[in-house]
Image 1 (cartoon, helix red, strand yellow):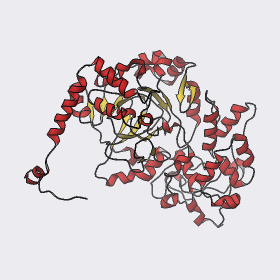
Image 2: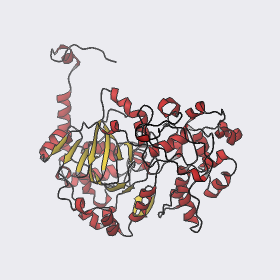
Image 3: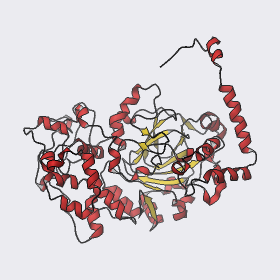
Length: 523
């Protein structure tokens, strides 16, 4: 289900079609002649050099854009194959785009479609095809192609070896090693390929991080939490909840690697040891880094489950009446800076809490009645089309929210803090640094009726997640609630009906009530 939070772990190139915006619409991404800025830093938008020799690979690109809008990471290097944004063609002394000349009759295909076709090939076939021309060489070495090959063929994990192509080759022939540097192609212009590189190397802009309008609370009672946040379905950031967690003191990298040993954790579609995952996360530079997201971590490594406890605010979890048949509900999350989760709604209409143990996370949340810009859910909610990467959403859509009447709730959740995510809220999360967190989804009396309504939808077999028995989950859950908590459902339904009656105001009352004001149409 595309709205499930672990969906984004494996990028499918075909998902890009509705989300990439042409770079030519962003004037500040059209590069010009290099110039020196403050501190003798080259402009990020300095033209990428026309190199063809491998020994020029180490040239770094640093600094800020002409209008200060974007800045690259200090360690960013120019595109490994010399790809430039299409706007650069207008400033080139040559009017030739080698992308087109090298593709011949295939130049009429969009980059997305051509990559979709290449995605049907095997590794050896891509290797052979890369010798056809310089243009084929660039496309066939597009890293996401090799990433998908690794994830498809290495279900029991992989040892990342500098690049996805090198990782694939070494996984099948460990004695063979590819030269890490590639050939740079002159006059190759592609917005699509360049933006993939740009999103992998872009720093988070300060203005993307400075807005913090979430309500923060420390030391409030459970009753106050329920009254002010859970019942009205509003997010809140809670401080001081983790002070007694052993995990806060113990969970550094060395401890986690030692205690986890050879246990294998879910990383997208593959399973791998934590030590191998850290090897990957330390070396990779891509627009959507894989993150470790495992629902069985406490069963695999019981010590991890003993190092934390559920905060009192979330102690009631009615899915527990199902015992071992309950859907997945808790996860350990580990990922590098730039990893995270694009916009989604938590599964099965549950609420959630997310506790940061190491690092920090940027959160953007929209209420259930507001679909985030750039996000296109299907009518039945089974699928969601959104930008390829989280950075791309910030680049292309974040500013749109500034003019909206209903602006998102935003915050940076730091180590030791917990965020409450109410059911039905859209949310995006990106790690700002290497991060470790625990998250749990839960069902309390406040959202029990919503969960039951969700589970009995006609397309439950598509929407429900975290369990194999999707179709029968509603009946099992309802029966278990009635057996364990007799009368609870009737009581909640009665309260819901009374609440609706109190909220309902007749048309005539809205017209005649002087406190309400005159009725008027508003479109």
